[in-house]
Every structure is written in C-alpha cells, then in structure tokens.
Image: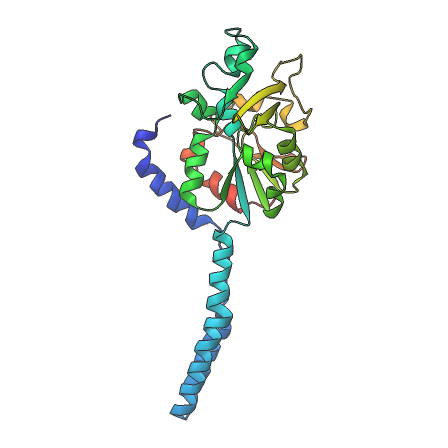
Length: 272
C-alpha cells in the first residue's frame, strides 16, 4: 500500500472520473424558447407576466426535476458496493490463513470482525484501495457483508451491485448477490468460501471452501471456479467478461484502480 504519496494523484483521478460520469441530463430548449418569445412581446407588462410564467416553468419543470434527479442519483438508489468485511477479517493474523498454513488448529477458523491489528495483507484482500476511491467519488452507497447477511433484500433496492474481493460470504449473502440481475464483480475470486456470521460475538466461522472439508469452491459458482485472474495484478489489458448475472473483471485491480480513470468510468457508467 503506497497511500502516503497518492493524495494529489487521487485528487486528479477523482475529478477526471467525475467528468466522465454520465450524470442525468436535462434539456432546456423549451425554457429557452419561452424566454425568447417573451422578448417579442410589445407590452412591457405582458412581457413581465410572460417572464414570470417562464421563470415558474423553469423552476417547476426543469430546475426541480434536475435537482430531484441529481438528488436521487446521489441518494444512491442506483449503485451499491459491498465492503468485504468478512474477507478482511479472514486474513488477519491467527485467522484462516494461519490455519491453512498449519500454524494453528481449528480455533483460528473463528475470527472477530474487529481485529486487534490491521495489516497490509488485510487491506489488499479487503479491497481497501477500491473502497477509498469509491468514498472519494461519492457515487454509491457502501454496505458491509454483515448488513447484507442480516437483510439480504437490501440489494434489491439498487439497480446495480458492485462486488469487490468478497471471497468469504454467508449463504444468505451469496443468494442475495447471485439473485440480483445486474452485478459487477470487480475482483476475481469472489463468492469462493462459505462462512457463518454470529452477530452476538461479532465473529465469522469458516464452514466450507478454500480446501476446508475437502472443498475448494464452496458454492460451485462458475466465475469463482478458476482463480487464475486473481494473480493478474497488472491489469494491463483488462476487460469485463460475462458472468451468470452480470460481468466480472478479468484481473485483480487493487493497484491499477488507483490511477486508471478509464476503468472507473467504465465501472460507473456501464450497464450490464
């Protein structure tokens, strides 16, 4: 993670991306025509009346709808991103990966969602760079794995869902994501292993997948069967490939996402 020297670069990237977003458009031709016709009136008083009417027309039929449209857009009913909090926790020290390496027993298969320490590996696996850019762009809502698990229907209120490196998910979350008709899987290797979530202890426990219990792909979900794209971190010739219910990026963009404006514009504007 090289965050200390990216602030200025990110500033220019964010502005470049915002300039490329297809914001809601409004045509003002009718309002302009109304103002033009006002000038042709001979009577000053009549012109004043027409002018006031034109102003009312502009406000109620153009300005307010535009404001409402932008407000609707910025209230983020269009786009939601799922923060991979379960995956972030899985990569913590004394967690799942210490179990995989044989450094500890099954006690490492239950981990807290509020780790005592934060490592660069956890940030990398948890799509931290993408999340920072998403917050800067202010173009979407962000929900967590546990929020989707508790209330799977939350995704149905959005037109588009973006999944990050959500490698570890619950069954409820998996079902909610795969049933949505318009999902952009921004990181490969998502929806790979099954965990359970305990809201009382605020922990997750590995149930199946990633080699545990002899199973690699816990859900047998086609896009996650191959993990080769997870190791393509350069993203030099990135492209979106068709997934079951949307599209999936064919590389791991955690570094590229910090400077590739074209990728962000494609992400936000794309209609699956």
